[in-house]
Image (cartoon, rainbow, N blue to C red; front, side, top):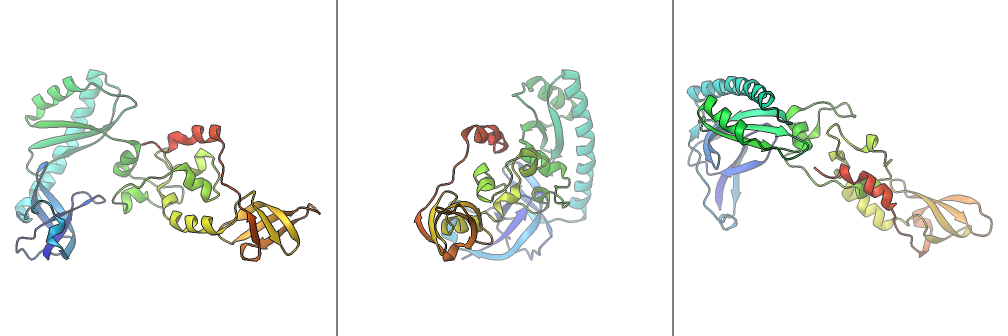
Length: 287
């Protein structure tokens, strides 16, 4: 077994594993580590975890040290540098008349690289901008175009529930969310009701989806032919959470409300979605 620690480089983000290298590391400690981007300072999110060594195809990198006072002072200087770099980059974007929206500037701990994150509707030729920025900052410059979900995570805000965005509060990674989920959860397919501030489907549609899928398997669908105590009929409406079915009885045309456990399914229905409706909402799924 291999003893590892998990380090996170953003307040909410993916956890990367490192070898504690004999250091007595505690949760929330700041540590200096070497990454693919260079030397970075991260926060310990996971400690004292043991994993089968065979699960790692490459050796884990050891942490360099636990951050000291000089390191913390360097982090504060970097924050000021990032704020200045952000403003300078905005001015350069305007000067080059580029159609891009700057979201964040970030420098590595060792100042070996300066990264700028931006959104844009189309592909942007920023080669001249990179040269201009490199001449100002005298370091390696990298521009990254991000999606609207990442933009929402970086900027933060309040969702329609009144709570801070899930993506900026606790979601380490984005999970795929589809129109099918909204349909199965019997939600209104009005884009304003099922999309977040980012303009994409709300991440919270995923939270209860497993439960809805299980209920969907055990509940007769709309259009199903069922046998009830009042006779044979067709399911007109279902409530997955309560298990109640609205069934239109064949001979009388009366609609009765029955429990799904009290009916016998003769022929199940199928979930259908209007293709035009699906195409109109498809862009809500794309990042």
